[in-house]
Length: 124
Image (tube, rainbow, N blue to C red; front, side, top):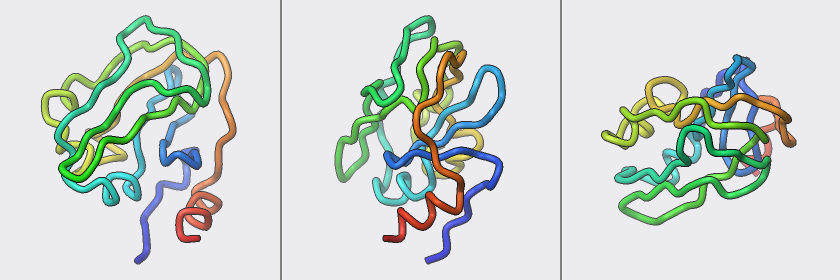
């Protein structure tokens, strides 16, 4: 299976992605969305909440399982994707677009991978 990963994004070993924008947009990868199956519920931090890179910041629930979401950055939540909370299937159908989760004013970025490195570790 070939996974299409946008090369301009950064990835984590926990299957989150983020961009270089300010504030940074964060979501889960298509690899994670496919593994979870039909996503039915998102629990995300509130606007203004402080995040620490590597810490649990919420949950994503599918018809198969419940998984924790981890923050790839330290910073403050600037925006939450209410459309994805209202319709979690957006995360399945467009994980790198309409299915984004948070926008964060980044103070520090945790360890991230390139698309190529993420693809290699996800396949392994």
